[in-house]
Image 1 (cartoon, one colour):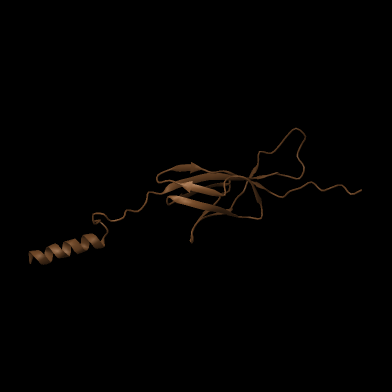
Image 2: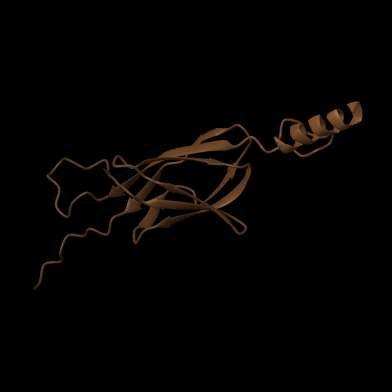
Length: 132
């Protein structure tokens, strides 16, 4: 009877994930990547002496690719985003027609780290060329 009770207890403990066998692998502590995405220029015509610091890019999808694994982040209305990633190296792909002016396209995340990665994109807004 005691053997049966002990076996049942071990089975329930292992099934619930409360016990880890010695030498078993532990899940890696993720790192956090946060940042902001801005687009330049803000308008085709800006007032003399004034420049725009960039306008936030809302609802932009950022894909963090490691091998066949893809983790997605989406910017909020202010262009901010946050994502938790397992330790490793990632290629960053922005789902946009805009070109990246600044910001890394490859990042390395370490366990438990907090990294800020900002991007500035070319909005494609141009002043019309005068016709002659």
